[in-house]
Length: 84
Image (cartoon, rainbow, N blue to C red; front, side, top):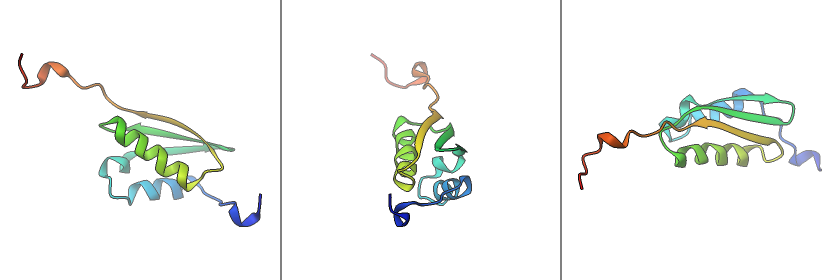
């Protein structure tokens, strides 16, 4: 791999990217880096946002393995206003 394609990224860089982006829900996501593994943790309200966080980080550091441990709380379907 060429030296120009290697990017040195740390925990602060990843969290800063998520915290300054347009998606407010991603601002609470945290990461941990262990050698070549990056672990995302936190909670977001939808699976879309979970995937979005993973995709943004993967594009930022494609050379690292990524584990997505972001949680999406279950929605309480009994409180919906729809009635059959």
